Length: 451
Figure 1 (cartoon, rainbow, N blue to C red):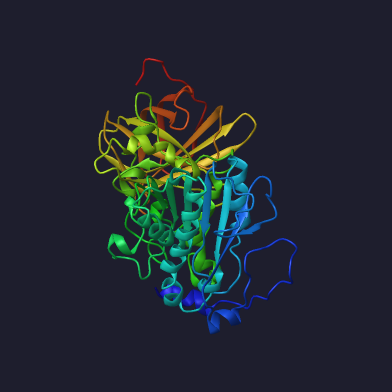
Figure 2 (figure 1 turned 90 degrees about the vertical axis):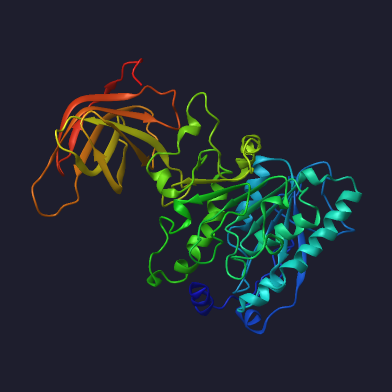
C-alpha cells in the first residue's frame, strides 16, 4: 500500500489532446484526478473492418459488432493521472492480428481517474453493471456467452469477476492481469475475481508484494519470476515512476508477448517457485506427459487438462528475460560427479553456436549438492535458444571468497532442451572443473539409449 501512495504522489501533469477524427480513449489531466471524476463508461469497438478507428457503441448502437464472433472486452484499472494506458493500442491490434473478433475497450477513465484509490475501487461494481446491460442486449441480438471474453487489468480484473458472477460463471473466459491487491486481498469470493466467474479463468500475478493480489484467483494462476520483482524493473525508488508501476504493468506486457509469433512463454505447474527453480516441476513437456500450459492468449488450450484436476485449479511458474519479448528457454544440465567428498556449489553454463551467438545461465539460486555417482539435474534458463550448439563452457563455484579452491570431477555432463525434447542431447565425459575457472569444450552426441 505504501508503494501505491508513493506512486500517486509522484504523478506528473498530463495535458489534454485536441479533438481527433476517430473516437479515442478519454484523456484527462492530473487536475481532474485531484478534483475527482464522476463515472462515465464509454465502449469503443474495433474490428478488422475498423482496426485503427474506433466506433463508439452502446446497448442500442452496435456498429460493426458481429454477434456470431468472439467479443473481447478490455477493462483497464486505476488511472491516477488521467492518461490513457500506454499498452492499450498494442493490445487491441495484437488481438485482432491473431483472430477475427470484436474488441471492445471499456473506457471508464471518468471514474478511474482520481488520486484517491478507494474512490476508483468503489466504482468497480457500477462499471460491471454497465457491462452487464450491454452484454444482455448482445444476447438478445444472438450473441453467445461462450463467445464473451473479458481481459481485466488490475481493478479491471475484479470488474470482470463481478460481470461473470452476474452470469453465474457462464462467460467463456476471463483473464486477470495482475488483479489489484489493495482493498481486495483477503476478501471473500463474492467481492473479487474468483475461479467460478467464467468457464475458464486465467490470471497473471506480477506484483504480489505491492499492487497485485497474492493468492490464486483463477483456474490457472501464472507467477512470472515467482510473482515478485520482475527482471528489468527498477529495484529502488531511484528508478522514479517506473519503480512503482513496472512490476504491476509487466503482466500486460507478458500477455502481449503471447500475441507475437516469435514468443510462446511456457509455464510449469508447481506448488512453489522454489520447487520450479529446483527443476522438480518440468515434466509436463516431456513425451507421454500432458503439454505444458502457455501464458497469455493461448492459456485456454490447457483447459482440458484442468478438468482432470480436483479442484480444477493450479499454479504455474516460469522465469522471464529483462526485455521484450521476455522469452526464456529452459534446459536441463545433468551432472554426475565422482568426487570422494560431497561438494556444494553453483554452476554457470555458457552455450555458443557456429555463428558466434552466445547465451549464458547462472544456476545459483541455491547451492547444488554433488555426491559421488549421483546425478544432479539443474534447470538452466537462457535468453536465446541456440539450435545447434558448437561449444559449451562450465564454471563451478562454491561462492567462497577465502579458503581453499575446490575441484569438481565430472564423470558425465548432459545438456537437454525442455522446449525441444526432440533435439539430440549433448554430452561430455571426464571433466575436471577447477573452482572459478571456465572450462570450454566441444560436446558430443549422447548415446541414444542413454536416459
